[in-house]
Structure formats: C-alpha cells, structure tokens
Amino acid sequence: MRIERLFLEHFRNYVHQEVSFDPVCNVIFGENAQGKTNLLEAVQYLSCGHSTRAKNDRELIEFQAENAVLVGEILARDRDFVLRTELYREKRRKLWVNKVPCKTSSELSQVFQTVFFCPEDLLLIRDGAAARRRFLDNALCQLRPRYSAALAAYRRAYAHKTRILRDCEEQPGLLDMLPEFNERLIQSGALVIHYRAQFTEKLAAIAASNHADCSGGKEQLSVVYKTVSTIQNSLEELPVLTQQLRAHMEAHRNAELASRLCLSGPHKDDLLVEIDGRDAKTYSSQGQTRTAALSLKLAEREIYKNVTGEVPILLLDDVLSELDPRRQEFVLNRISGGQVFITCCEDDRLPVLLGGKVFHIFAGQVTG
Image 1: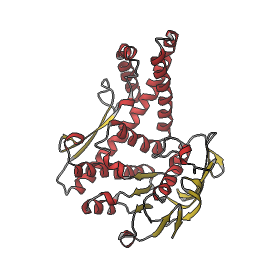
Image 2: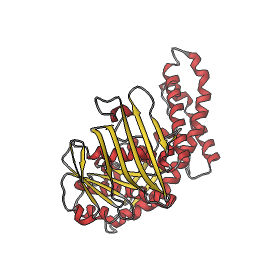
Image 3: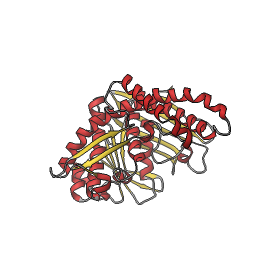
C-alpha cells in the first residue's frame, strides 16, 4: 500500500500544496518549524481520522482560514482510492472514500494504515500508563474497526458515569442511571480488553525478537498486558471477560461512590515492559528503554503486515537523529518492504543510503 499523491489546503502552515511521492522512500528535510512534521501528520490523519499531535481538529486549520482540505490518492489491495477530509472550525468534519461519505473514521483505516514514529515515542517506556494505552489504541483503531467502535462507546459511557458520580450528592436522582451506564461500560470495556490482550500477545513476541536483534542477543524483552485484577487471563473468551469485569465493577461500587471517581475498567490498563526480568520503566537505562520503544513500534508495523497482508506506510519524524549509530542501523535495516517517509533537518546521507525521492520544505512549501 502507498500514498501516491497528497493535496493540502489550509492545513497547518500549508496554504495550498500538491505533492507526488515515491512508492518506496521519501526523505523530507528542512529546518525546524517549516512544516516537515505537518506533512507526515496529514498522511497520518488520512489513515485514521485523527492526529496524535492535536487536541482537536481546529488546531489543524491554518490560522486565518475557516476550513482545511486533505486529499490523498491511495493504492491499496491493488485498487485506487481517493480519500478526502474537510475540517471546519464551526461544524463537524466530513470524510469521503471514493466520493462516498464515511460514517466513522474507521472507514479510512480500512483503506490504508500508517505507523507514525516520533522522538516522543522513544519515551514510551518511561512515560505513564496513559502513553502506553494511547499506543495500543492508535494501533488497534486502525487495525480493528470493531475495536474503534467499542473504544468510542466506552469513552462515552465513562464520561456519563463520571458526571453522575461527580454530581450525585447534589442530584441524588442521577444514581438511578448508574446501573445502565455500568452495563454499557462492562459490555464495551470487555471488548476493549479482549482486543488489547490479543494484540499484546502478538506484539510481545515480535518486539522480543526485535529487541534481541538490536541488543545483539544480550537482552531479553517481555511485554505483559495488565488490566483489572479480577481478570486473571485476559485471553479468555469474551463472555468470561464480561463476567469478570462486572465482578470488578460491583466490588468497587462503594469506593466509587465515596471517591466520586470511576475506579473500575480498562481506562486504567497498562503494559508491563521488562528487560531481563526487571521493570524497564524503573530500572533500565535510556539506551535500553529506547531500544524497547523501537522494538514495539516496529512490531506494530509487522503485525499490520501479518494481519492485512500489506505493509503500512511508515512515518519516521526526525527519529534517527535521536538514536546512536547502532540503533539507526537497526531501524534502517527494517524499513524495507513498504513505503517510508523520513524527516530530517539536513540533506545528509539518508538519500544515498535509501534512494527514492528527496523533498525540501521551507515555510510550508515543498520542492523536490
């Protein structure tokens, strides 16, 4: 799969831009704050309907414009697709696949997927649990449309329950609604746990192999999915997970009412990452945690390939400059086989090593 052409209008600092890409490798260079990351962000948005850099779509619209347009010409599954997104300041966005309106952003992900890797991802292991949940969610929302729907349903029910718990002392009648939203959380939450567990099982095996290769066989990486305590085996069948999640929520009912907080559910999940049997977040060096993060992100790409039969587009945003030569070589040796975008500050050795097209970006203008 690949993106052949991209058209942007009033997206970030791009007033009007049209660019055609190499099917294999695209090296994008320029000074900071010129628009390199914005270009990759546009490709990512067309693949999943959201940006990992923006809190809302309004941030993606050029400062003085009222709307933004993104159009991508995609080759996937031996077919041509045109994806179009229109973003507005004052109304809901609009999405199309081949001129057919989309009901949800997951319809974009069914056409093509991206794996976005930026310097912040190198802190994935050291960050809090929210960063690792975000990693799981971003990957699974592209890979499994049903997961995306379950996660959206869970978040809606969580928001409602949080408001009920917050306001129930002043409005006791709100508690009558609590059983309904608990059941919604249980049903959608069990699905979220099911998909996260299945994905993590595949992720752990591939990431462990990657980490062993990068460390020269000197270190062993393990990744374990951690969810609510009543679920001993998150790979159980969905009815079992549903029953065990319900038991956990019922056990925490009084604590939730006392604290006015939603304490039970997969919104507190985490990945336990260990290197040689020790918690990587606490005990590993910066080099070890960076290797582990690299291993996880490249494993994500491999899972997409194994599940869909196609290699997702790999977006590397100034990652190589943050790595030592050994880790740079590790990444470069594993990016073949699909379309790749790499940003860097200077037109250095990458074009010689990788071939493909080279683009220069200055003040929201692409040349090359």
